[in-house]
Length: 434
Image 1 (cartoon, rainbow, N blue to C red):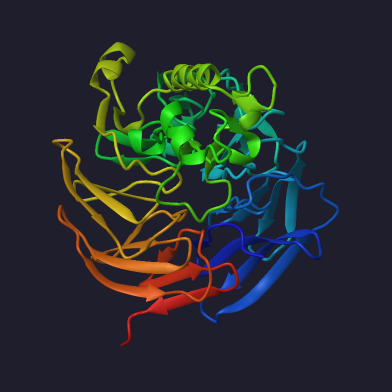
Image 2: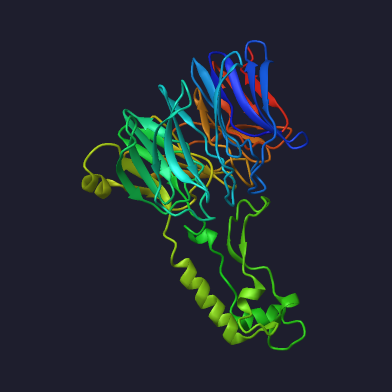
């Protein structure tokens, strides 16, 4: 049932959900003063898109202001309600098609609703009038969409600019006209949302082979024969061929589709049912050529102002290892925090660009939720539901942990001293004991 991160406005919490049994999508409004459901609206008869096993068709977070709430479902499109649950408008869209599933979230900036939609069917950034659902402007993204791209980032705003972590780039657009003002290429799948700190935008640019830990080594043919040639034929048959990762996430091994393996059929070049030394050397050479096409990724700091040439020269790569794939960075008082699979937390001094600490929280395995800050604490949540509470500062330390009763993929929300955590089964609210 669980889907998106929740959004809070005026004492109301909005969230979306997907019911696999009823085959319905829904947006729900919860009254935070009472802790009860105020209204719920379902959408039926939708032809649902497919995606990664961790994805569901309600993975996108709704956006809201004091006037309305807008939900985006990739399989359906956009739908807008007022705070009483009355539908204002809807804008159906064609069913997207992608490997991961269309999990981007829209953003409201005044009367403009900004949506980034990237998949094999369409790839664009658009501004919709929140009052009537009509298109104000639409810009096609010219970067070709491929299966390795996620395009799940949410647009953010700086003054009159929309900043988009897009496919293999970070782009700046005029909020009023949609004119593309500036862009920088990056080795990224556009998974996480950027954050602004002072005069810079911080982007976690990740790709599947961006650092050595994501690129396992391979045995030589002699090692392959020594360990796996059961019938001593000096060759490797399909039944003898071991599982070898082309790329994988070493700190998220329990997650489904955690990487890609070398296929026996791709190494048996002459299709005779065995792999000999020449074929294995040919396979390794092909893999090396394939890997060489991937650039190193990193956490980037990009100037918000200035001429393009100057800004390009001033782009900084702060760290090149332990870059988060899904969780977005967060910043507070000059320190940037990121968390990746395995609960690896990195803190970076924004001004110097130096890494000030790298430690493991108590959370392990896959991390989808982004870190959040409430009061003087930093919170991270692992996919299996372990919340780690850390101190803030250049050298954060784990203070406490709390185990939730179910998996948590959604980022917690904080409002008026209350921490809201959405598991795969329930919504929980926590506050300090008075």
